Image (cartoon, rainbow, N blue to C red):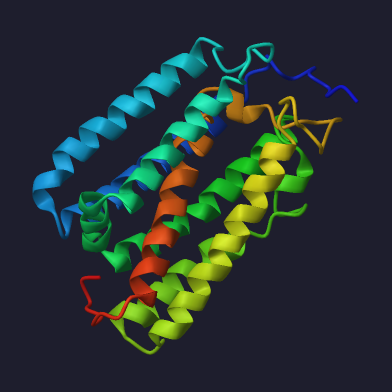
Length: 243
């Protein structure tokens, strides 16, 4: 079955693009705060590197680089696989693990609140025929639960400790599963060679500016946060309010 590409070259409304750009900026700010609280000297180099990455994939998306569906391998893989490769490198290298272990656990937990904003963006994109309903909260995506509970879990885990490490670990695992669920549906509904879902209204938004930042930055940051938290919480080490 061939996907319906009638809206492939249709630009989403400006207000939605601006709203998502601000969501991306908030995600960047929160991640930098997690770095700055424990490694202030690394904040600027990491900011510079992330800004370069955002500008590069943003410019490519603005030139319809990712919209070319005939390229092999699919060009979207560039924006998705490089951040994943970086995450893997951080976990397998000693210096990378030291960096991850120094990140502020409270801040990366609060960071998950941006998922509420992402869900609002996805719903707006669905209304404008840019993503299928199944990756919104009216479909199979319940990721908004993680976003809504994140500040509550963070507050009662760190500001007024009332939640044990075990429950924080459980929350991170469940929130990670919610993320995997929506990412899986988003990938399988994109107009790629292995598309399996939503042929009537495929996920074309992630091929465009600024929404390329969702798979290229926002999702990898959230994924990294969960992996860091899970690793830290299962390791035998004393907890502190600084994470």
